[in-house]
Image (cartoon, helix red, strand yellow):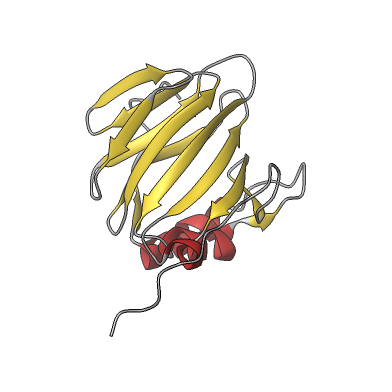
Length: 159
């Protein structure tokens, strides 16, 4: 027997669990519980020169939709600048990274499918929002394999 379909959900601006991870503010807008496991949706606020190092998500597909600012987004062996309205899809297992290359804060939506995995990763390694708290990189690297995330050497993103 199939599980019941998810209920309709409306999320107000600013609502959702908020975490700080590697200098970014990540707000959970939709979780696997909200979508019947289909996906999870996050709103990211990235400071200038902030972003994520190269990595592979072995268990999830990832989609990026830029809302504000300019990101350098790496998908596989290609890096492109993406501004507001731009979209990128990253199939699971593909190298990916992004960095805010603008002068001000940048924002984007990140959708991961299936849902559930990234929410648990954030809950384990993301600190509840505490401005000025330094990232615990060791904690992130230690937990990543459990969630199918493989971090790679820093190269190709202008760091």
